[in-house]
Length: 618
Image 1 (tube, rainbow, N blue to C red):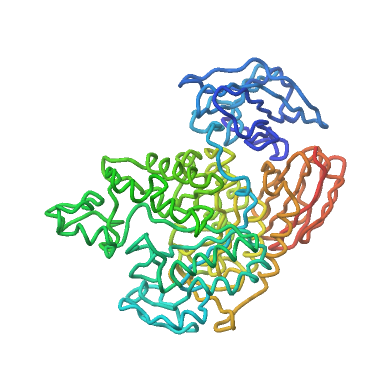
Image 2: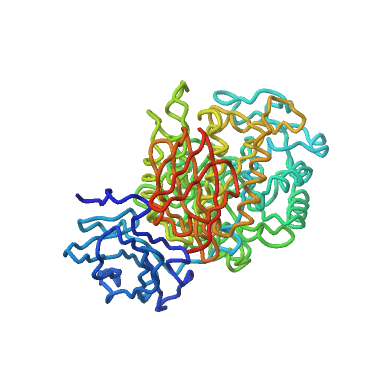
């Protein structure tokens, strides 16, 4: 066999980039880094363990690793690797007494030699702020979050279709981008106490610059806050109020394109002699141009232009810098369609642009975070040198939808979720997550955004089985990464696509609500804040079948055992010696029954259950 699937999950070797296994979490070039792996006796008699690592394009094995700790039938082995290059990959070579040589990499344990692309990854790019992994994010779409008394002073713009707060949202067709509810930043200030109760620690605002749409991804200027949102004064007031209440707050920037009403585009359209002409991909006397997926209102930036770089992303006078500095003080940026930025035909300036943006952010305030949007697989490109984390659906959101999907739903091909033809099992969720997370270095993985849904997807609740949101929210708050609450999740709102899910928040019950999730999010946030292992602990899956998965989050202080079910779990069995200390397990959240025996531990839980047990650190 090529993959050693006969070993129970709980007894397979384990390593990840967390502090239990990589003792230096922010190595510098030429640092010596201690790297550990834990191996259970069930694998067989171990003769030797080595780390095979990359150096300047070649692969070398270390000398034999030292056995540094034994806990029950687990032995921890330690090797030392020198950071010869800024980016390195590695795997473990496990030689058994019977002569077999096993390869253990980021996707599993194998008899056969494996491609380097699936190795563990380590680099010298760990620069995300310390507060990043502990963040609990709340995503706000300003037009739909809250309308303050200030908003009544503003007339709807000429492009807009005015709507009352209780009106039905247009989800597709004419008027989708023009429907205008008039939410503003003053309205966000009015509801900060709600967000505090929810346990939120960071606000993420989708674009606040003026545009000719309700989503504002078609910026007409980056020099001011949209007056319809309250202008610069409202943003200053919001950031100040948010900071006083302990929130971080980040903005949303479109580095791939502007709107066709942008001052730069208007200056250069049909005017080849304009200085801004080089900012875009014009042809035919500047009458034709490239745009985001051919949408005329979203002309694509040409990052070969040094002047564009200077105005937008480079240096302390750039757009990127302006909003991080006083009198504003954003704590970071989420970069829209980061994966497409700087890429067109044979040109690829993606990494260059990302690194310039990050350099500028560091110059202004190194304690800021930079998250890149990826609707697809981000792992092999997001390594921390530019984007410090990713808004990505591949490694968490999509597998979760496929596990919890309601097969009675009429729609099967869903925006940013792809085609869902069947219910995948918990075991398949685990397999998918491991594969799509494998290429992230740990410091990126803990800063990735774990969303159930966003403004660009249908609502999770609308397409999943009854009770699924509570279980899925539990997984958001217990997986490595940043849990993301999309405004309205806590009110049980629905939406068949991303546009429809941008529903005005029913502060005064303007539409049907289910507020039960408010307490769920509050409790999960409190759990995450209390237990550090849920922030920086390793992730080790110990059981998965069709209906149930069980995993551990462990650091030097504690071990959290997490149980998540879709269907009923009745006396599922996990080898007791696979989880040291399980006899001392104490239920700290949810409902489940755990009975630890000498050989096996049995766990039972109802359908759609989520539970967390606290164990001592091994």
